[in-house]
Length: 120
Image (cartoon, rainbow, N blue to C red; front, side, top):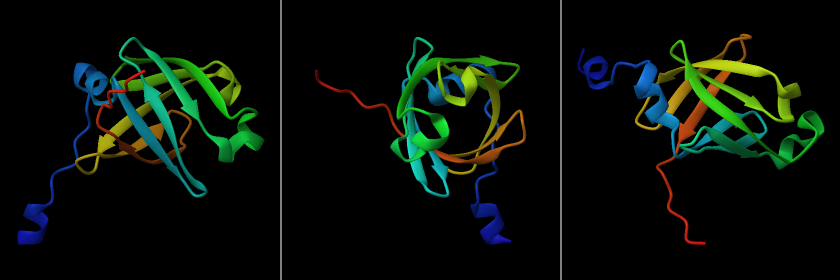
């Protein structure tokens, strides 16, 4: 009763709301051997760094492009994942946590960090 009503209903951001969820933010993808960050820039560029995954990805860092299409977050790395396009459905399961489902059936969770301003 009360416990169930205290839990926020999971939400599935779509369209512009989905773009705003990741735009200008860093998303930490959780994996069994650790998490790795993907930075989604507002201009549609993205960068990633995954030193623990060099053996499977071929390189520690990569960059690519991201966009929203058909209520999915789509992306293509320049080198990682054979430079193939993948699209993800996201479902919020907390204030900053999302469950993702990639169009090939792979799924997991991620944490979305607040935007960070860096002085350079």
